[in-house]
Image 1 (cartoon, helix red, strand yellow):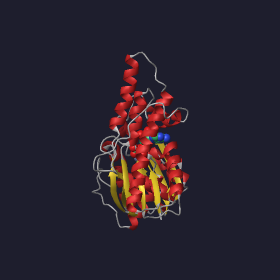
Image 2 (cartoon, rainbow, N blue to C red):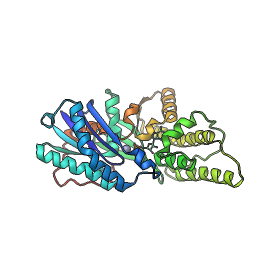
Image 3 (spheres, rainbow, N blue to C red):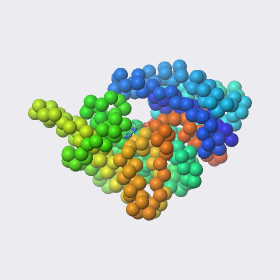
Amino acid sequence: MKILAIESSCDETAAAVVENGRRVLSSVVATQVEEHKLYGGVVPEIASRRHSEAIVGVVREALERAELTVDDLDAIGVTYAPGLIGALLVGVNFAKGLSLSANLPLIPVHHLRSHIASNYITNPELEPPFLCLVVSGGHTHIIEVTDYTKLRILGKTRDDAAGEAFDKAARAMGMPYPGGIAMDKLAETGNDKAFKLPRPTVDGAPLDFSFSGLKTAVINILHNAEQKGQTVNIADLSASYRKAVVDCLVRNFLHAADETGHKKLVIAGGVSANALLRRRLTEECKRTGRTLYMPDLSLTGDNAAMVGAQAYYEYLAGHTAGMKLNACAQRSI
Ligand code: KG4
Ligand code: ZN
């Protein structure tokens, strides 16, 4: 079954053709990041306009690279939630139009489910049940995946998402948006014991996260140094901060694994590209006899191949939509 998938939830316009949920025949991503960088973050109005301009070309290219036409497709999959509403609407309306004109089933896909599904592409042997840590710019969830379309949130952030925490702290340190990647690189060269930072917990909810206090601690360090006319070693601060965030992620994820007894651990989302998170979880899983699955680095950020992967399983579960499909800015998994 060949599915044309479309993703436009944030600042990437993407299209892909995926066969039977696992084999990527083509994947095209047009990023707007350079333009949003000028404003220090994603500007929703600009994102919607750029999606509208890019979507026809991106879909056409995905079909051309797969050497297919619309007639060869079996269904259309599209991200419908959560995300920037104006951005989502571009993908959803385009998918509805194509589904109607080509008489193809329309499959709505939840953005976080698609991030998880990036692992089905990279790890052909991976099947539910498993435990997944989804860490992106907008979400930080520990999710129990009992089946491809049966998912349960066990823990989540009470304030900032992990990606947001990286981006905000990186911005305070003077790095351009999105600072998570730059901070990860710089942290490799720094001393992670140089600054003492907290490892926040949430009272009575050991699987939930809280990152806003950690971010404030970094801002205070920078502010105090500035007032005293001192310079801060940004590589050391990056390394200390990255270690604190990753310590919290690993601590809660392993706690959830202990509680549920899952032996298959999976990570997904933009922050799953983080070098320290990958190293730490690899070590911990080796030490505790668990198997860790990670998406290929090319699939950690937003893309449509992962949407095509999840769309296949949604289709098998009978989750198709009609022309009444709407985009939702917020929707639980
Ligand atoms: O999943 P994603 O591409 O978009 C959302 O759905 O939000 O995640 C983007 C987030 C950004 O906050 C970005 O800074 C972060 O992922 N990110 C990283 C790394 N690569 C991307 N954070 C830490 N370390 C990285 N290597
Ligand atoms: Zn995402």
